[in-house]
Amino acid sequence: MKCQQCDKPAVFHITELESGEVRELHLCEGHAQAYLNQAEAGGGQEQEAGGPLTVSQTADELAVLDKKACDMCGVTFFEFRNQGRLGCPHDYVQFEKELEPLIANIHGATRHTGRRPDRAGSDLPEATEQLTGVIGLRREMQEAINREDYERAQEVRDEIRTIEARWLGPRST
Amino acid sequence: MNLESLTQATGEWLKGTGPESDIVMSSRVRLARNLAQFPFVGRASEQERGEIEQFLREQIATAPIGKDLEYIDVGQLEEVDRQFLVERQLISREHAEAQGARSVAIDRVEQVSLMINEEDHLRIQCMHSGLDLAGVWEQIRVVDEQIGKVVPYAFHDRWGYLTACPTNVGTGIRVSVMLHLPALVITRQIDKVFRSLHKISLAVRGLYGEGSQAMGDFYQISNQTTLGRTEEELVEQVGDVVPVLIDYERRAREFLVRETQQNVHDQVSRAFGILRTAQTITAEETMQLLSRVRMGVLLGLIGDINIADINSLLVQTQPAHLQKLRGVELDTKDRNIERARYLRKHFESAGGATSPN
Ligand SMILES: [Zn+2]
Ligand SMILES: [Zn+2]
Image (cartoon, rainbow over all chains, first blue to last red; front, top):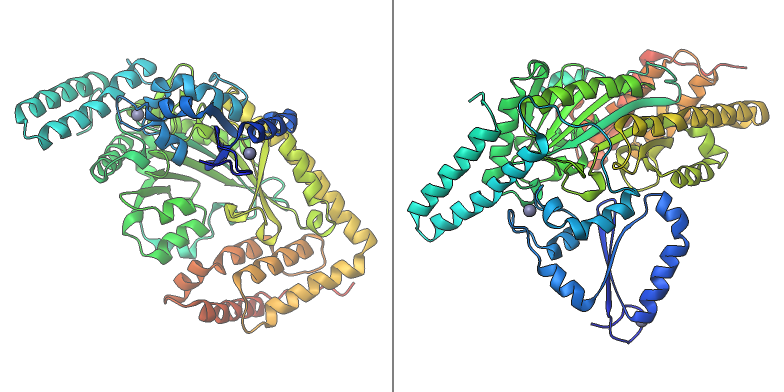
């Protein structure tokens, strides 16, 4: 792939994410440096203004990163970079390292200090961790059904029910 | 819920009441929430979207707020009805135009609305007329607390409430006020004001949030970041700039009256004249002219019209409202004719003489 601003090969691939809009930049080393410096210079202000979300990697790093997928919903980092939307709550755990600089860039912070949900008899972070497991199990069940392994599908469904019974608490239905 | 009954009502944000309602149209807070056991909406299958909808409906019904809500199946609505809900600011444009199972629940006074399967599983919105961020925050906090007791919100110790887009993560809160700032526009100070807002990380959008060019001098100011500060701090961040903007706008209005009395009176009168006599008129022009007339009323240059009336015309002359009121679908050309007819009829009965000073 060629640099978007000259004929040299593009070695930097930059994803900008601003208010949900995704913009991709492919630049040679020189142009990438110029671009990032410029972002940095305007950056004093940009940073304060909750400026754009920027990831920059070399092509090799990016290729590896793009293939990383969520164990639960299966979304790849490549899909996230393209759509600007994550696949499931577990992505914040799975891609924590990759998301951290992006989130720091958007919010100028990397830790929540606000309210916590108040659910009787349930520790929310723990419940979230357990319940997001259901997302992966549901996929597994579907795959078992697709290959007509009904025994496995049945097992997985029981697993889902156990987790739901434990963490969803008494349901109205 | 019956949309026809909404057609006749004015809607919360158009009441023209509440503190500072000459400049502040409405105060709004929304919270983005997701369930832990489902993929985010964009990645959910059609079946999962159905399950998300059903789960939320059933669980919210068991909360105290549940009995005040009526659901509308947005996916089943005609386009004109979806547009109608957008014009009333009860759903987002994205929610109207999306595909698949989705709905909105609205309380009787149109203060609380819950969008299900928008970008996030649940978007809670609360809106009051005039400047009342504290009241809005208190109301939505209670609704959120009630729902949080009956559904497992996706929550992480470090990242807070988990959202489909990282731009909303943490508190998931968007605090906004809609302001009417015609004098700052006329005196060309508006860009300067907004540049200073961007520096303190607040966002500015036009009415209905399309592009940056505001229709009819209505602007929405909101927080841009959602992580690393408490909800109260973010409410305060927006709340703190509003008195400053009100002060700027008041001073600009005084300046206009003092220094350009004839000009401003002429502009307002011409705007009023067109609204009372036009035979065909677009929605954009109508909003622009109503904005000027609204300012004229507030400056005492036009008598016999109240602000609530103008506010209500602002929404009644929108395309979907016009068609709902008329009871038939109209193309653009016929809508412009119908809009002009509606305005003439309205001002005929409402009077509204320009004061002769
Ligand atoms: Zn280059
Ligand atoms: Zn995932």
